[in-house]
Length: 98
Image 1 (cartoon, helix red, strand yellow):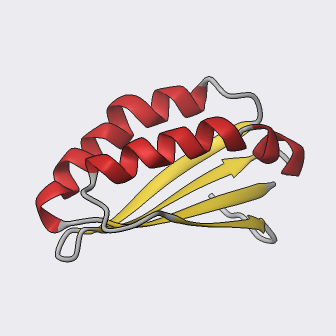
Image 2 (cartoon, rainbow, N blue to C red; image 1 turned 120 degrees about the vertical axis):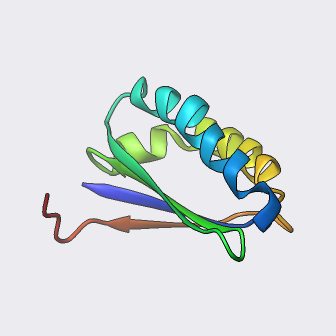
Image 3 (cartoon, rainbow, N blue to C red; image 1 turned 90 degrees about the vertical axis):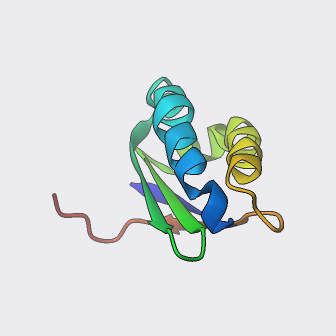
């Protein structure tokens, strides 16, 4: 399994809108992508900063989703009032417990 982490420096005033966009727009789109194994959004409401983590069946599924993920990340950054471009990191998931 692989994960992509997107760090967004948002604004507190836009945190709720960013959460709504993630739930209503981004999650349904992610669920339709091949190899997607889940997603989560972590938000610090005081600062507006957010961390979105998506899980992928394997590295090739994660890489195949890059172009669309870039578009979704840009839209989410706008919704959250981001002060700059999101930082993106990619990982192999070494341990996963549910």
